[in-house]
Amino acid sequence: KNEVEQSPQNLTAQEGEFITINCSYSVGISALHWLQQHPGGGIVSLFMLSSGKKKHGRLIATINIQEKHSSLHITASHPRDSAVYICAVSYTGNQFYFGTGTSLTVIP
Amino acid sequence: DAGVIQSPRHEVTEMGQEVTLRCKPISGHDYLFWYRQTMMRGLELLIYFNNNVPIDDSGMPEDRFSAKMPNASFSTLKIQPSEPRDSAVYFCASSLSTGGTQYFGPGTRLTVL
Image 1 (cartoon, rainbow over the protein chains, first blue to last red):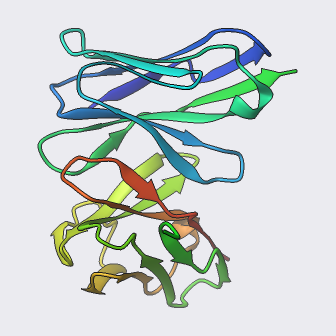
Image 2 (cartoon, helix red, strand yellow; image 1 turned 120 degrees about the vertical axis):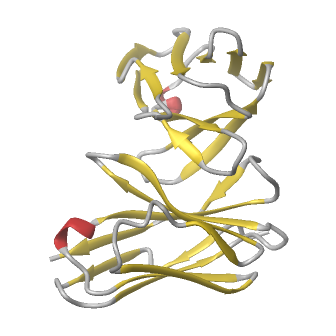
Image 3 (cartoon, chains in turn green, purple; image 1 turned 45 degrees about the vertical axis):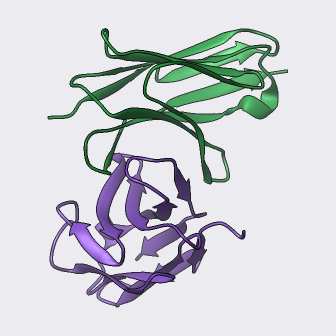
């Protein structure tokens, strides 16, 4: 079975804090995706990674293929970052296998 | 581009009724995906199409669910007859390439009473 595990499940932070969300998977992948789902329900793709690191604004995503692990970091967190962050992996096909998500709340 | 368009955004129906959800993918995208999201199970892939052809429908819960893609710009997901346990948010997504970034529609929130 393709397992994708995320931690923590829930996270509360003070505005300005550095945040890390982790994702582990069980077998080799072709790509790993980080998605963001806002309280209104819309889902946005943040990153697609197959190796190394990517940065977009205050968001940084890293992946370690050997350890089958990825992290999503948010620097200088802001209340508008409050959302559910979902890790998904894809293999040789096109299907995504999703983690259960991390619910982030950033308090002013 | 308008992004992935789904309709309706909300649907409330009674058990036993037929429900049809609609999706218009981003123009030029060859892949279209239907997902279901519930509190209990999170996001699950139901079916996906490549160039209008269903590739994998192993996630479709049972025969009450069917999906079609008659052309590159339109897909439907039909539930007949609907049951309360079908209540969920149904997302459509499209992508340009194999394993590439998927662009999600706003979802259809289905409530079956």
